Length: 157
Image (cartoon, one colour):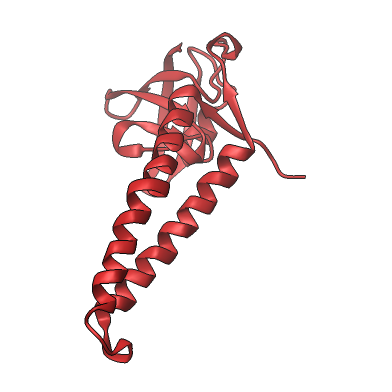
């Protein structure tokens, strides 16, 4: 049995939008590239054609992946998200005990993770270590950059 993918409403809408764009605009653009490349003649030495076909294959793979995710999705409703402990859907303010730096993370599923915007997966080292922790807890996190000690300052929606 396939496991449900847990998404925030925002993450669900973002993936839905991406799927729609790929199925409409993306497919049209790739089809046009293939048509243009075919007009160059001999396919055996036509790098534009090969590149367009590879782009088409990658796009169709992404479409299939998105359809699979969206077919087996569980959308987190705001009223289902507790702020008693860190879980998928919450925002958690932590303080790095080593340097005093404070960071606000949004804990999300791996399907909607965006570390550059502080949306971290519940499967990432920091996300996994923070799960089920409460305000005031100190958490030791083994990251690729080394050990971090984080203190949970606040949990919110």
